[in-house]
Image 1 (cartoon, helix red, strand yellow):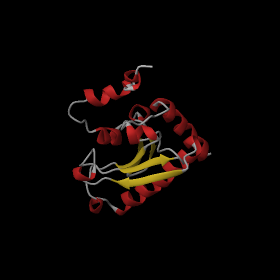
Image 2: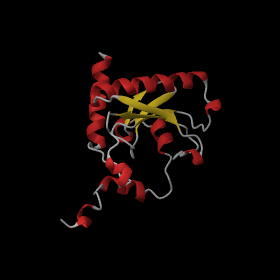
Image 3: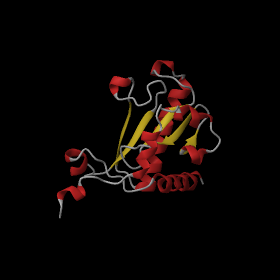
Image 4: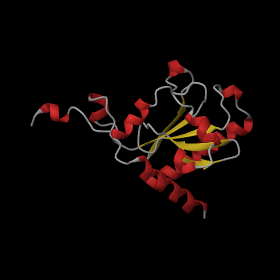
Length: 166
């Protein structure tokens, strides 16, 4: 087999990211939206919402986000802080049930030098993990393999949310 045949993985959904040009304020758009499915919003609270990451590090990568555009933890109200952590807990429950997540990375990237993709609208990352999920692809090829499409996972998460709410 020609070694060059496996040098690239086809991921057509990534073209959206590169075509976007100037980064749209997708978090503020999602905060104000009424069509949750179009924005991949999984849950809403009075001051915050839970959204799927459209360009995830791992399948099921969710973000808890305040409705208000703030860049620092100190700018959050007590209600926003509490809701962000409640949504992190809710996200873990959904991901354990829907995709059998075994562990989680939960955290904030504050500031560009810390890796924040959206510097002026802080968001709490909830990234599901599994025993042995660090395989050779990210280590040797700087590539992540995401085995499930966003729309399919969104439907699973919504079904699980609705099931748990009963």
